[in-house]
Length: 274
Ligand SMILES: [Zn+2]
Image 1 (spheres, rainbow, N blue to C red):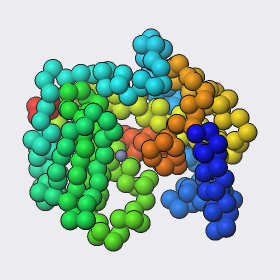
Image 2: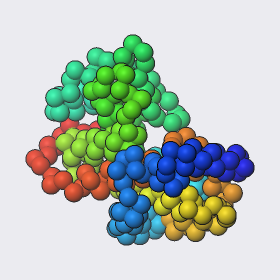
Image 3: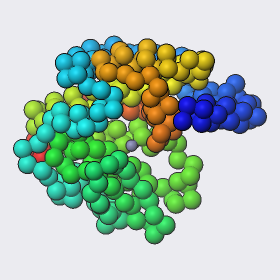
């Protein structure tokens, strides 16, 4: 996979240069109106706040990168699994988003969660059982994607910025925690989100570093990921977000969470959480 990823990066760079950009990373950032130095500053600020607790958890729990998501899932289990639709109905009612609900279908999966729109304008959510605060937050994150898709004419979807799409989904999960959870569950949910978005932050900084210098990706990967307190296999760098999502979107998670927390908390409600 190593040569494939490096070849992919070369081709992306060549395509960006042909369009007048310095390289692929610069082109993607420019498309969203971002400047590299500003972005690195924001991600570094996020790390300063959240890396110590994340690294402490990963070190004490002896977490290997390959087990990251399953361990995150077990970080804050719920006493009782929740049914997804009633949770979404409560949230949609509070947010005035009821018209989205009839367009939704939901299936359960033990693998990656996602939202996708079909030709019939129906929106499908694939989610894992709501038995932890990780899957609880993921449900509302994916509902955020669904609401973005529902708000756009179908012809506009290919032009949707992945960064904007992802930031809005992050805002939805944060808002659901504020609206539906009591203080204890909200705190657990925020811990889960901060832990995973710290990983996304490290991944984003690694990727920005890699686009500038790809002579020794294993060393870069080791340098960045060892900060997380996890066991690192340097050769796995090529499996980092290149595997499933665009490698230049991963930093949307900490950016979205930092944005969410910069908005003064309004009136929150309790008693309808999981
Ligand atoms: Zn998402």
